[in-house]
Length: 178
Ligand code: OFO
Image (cartoon, rainbow, N blue to C red; front, top):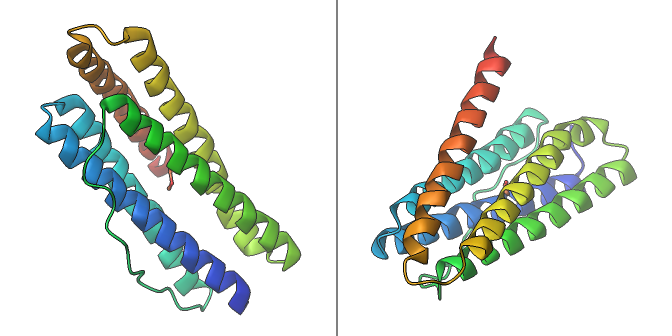
């Protein structure tokens, strides 16, 4: 059983995760169009992850006898100024998601809802990892700088980061299923 207040707040989080999935999908498409293949792969993976985050909440709400709602999503931006500004926007969005998760945690304390509090622990960890990952990407972009071939090197670097993150996620899944 879940309170109406908590159910509504979790449904809002579904909307935020779903928007993140669409935003990152739009970013993947822009990267592809610009010939940034490594970055496109990275953003496609992020988009899939956000969909999983959304579904995790969706199933949780049903499990605790609430009503999970499919959100209406506004169209995300379709064009971006540069790879750097794109990743800065990802980082900004992730910070927004973190702050929203923190509010959910505060609400679960207020409501004495320890089941939801426990459920949210996974998101706290996930947001810490996501923010750290985005800072790494932005730091590498800054290090590479804006020279003539910088986009080529930035994309290669992001492809490497993507492969490492995908391998870490696969190892985590394997541990969870062991
Ligand atoms: Fe689900 O918002 Fe990031 O990870």
